[in-house]
Amino acid sequence: MTATTSTTRRVSTGSRVRTAIKYVVLSLLALLFISPLIFMVVTSFKTGADATAVPPSWIPAPFTTQAYEAILGSGNTPVLRWFANSMIAAVLNSALVVATASLAAYPLARMDFRGKNVVFGIIIATLLVPPVILVIPNYLIVSELGWLNSIVAVIIPTAAGAFGVFFMRQFFVSLPHELEEAARLDGANRWMIFTKVVLPLARPAMATLALLAFLTNWNDFLWPVYVLFNTEVQTLPAGLSTLQSANAVRYDLLMAGAVIASLPVLLLYVLLQRFIVEGVSRSGLKG
Image (cartoon, rainbow, N blue to C red; front, side, top):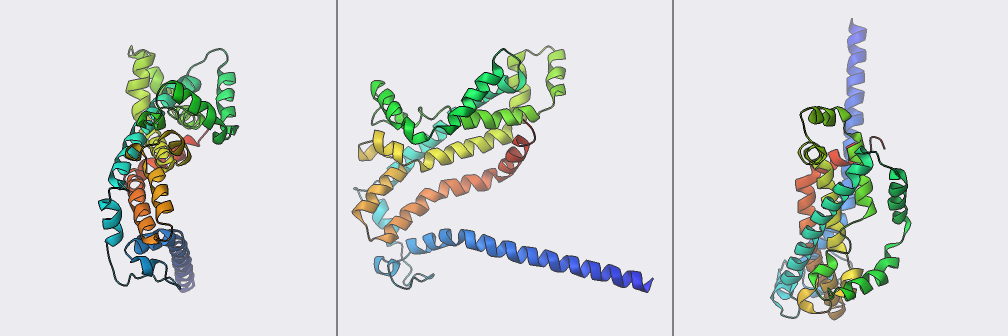
């Protein structure tokens, strides 16, 4: 009895030690990954001289908000206007991406029609096309539609994409068919099944796709530079690039702008983390 108790204690102690080591390793990795973010925030509260000091310091001396006051109070750098433009473009674009992807993915996952596999294969094949190749064709189309130098130009062209269709299809495939059959027996048509049964169950995948689309549009730099010319209609990444060229050595200003640009993405991830984990895990079950 004593030997068994001693063995149990050793196993329990060993398990606790392994768990402690795992937490230490994970904590060190987390600190390593977030250290650039921490340094960015710290630098944004430094003076211009302190931001370029060698060796760099992790504690501002002195602590100041002059970088934020400079970029938010200058008429030449309307950061808040750029922020609003980016927010409008990213929100509307992510909503359109979720809507188009859901409508396209559902028949590919749950309906049988001739050529379905061919259509899906063509959609997936477009993922192999480098996005930069589409810049000139998209520019010509946007120009013909009269959307140049307007926020519409950074919302519509990427409103439908192959990744969203693939992602939503994988989630729809994982749903049990019995749910649709029960709804059909209750007299629901295909549209009612899609809107009343399937979409409510797909909220985790839709939230994940919306966040990915938001992040892609929010961080897009190349396309807004080509289609947005006036300062007032610029998005945040394109606007911050002009800030960088005008203040090449003012790293405090650049880091302050980067902090402002990072806040919405970090906030959205914190709010939608549960849906993201569930959406990604369910979308990879089978296909």
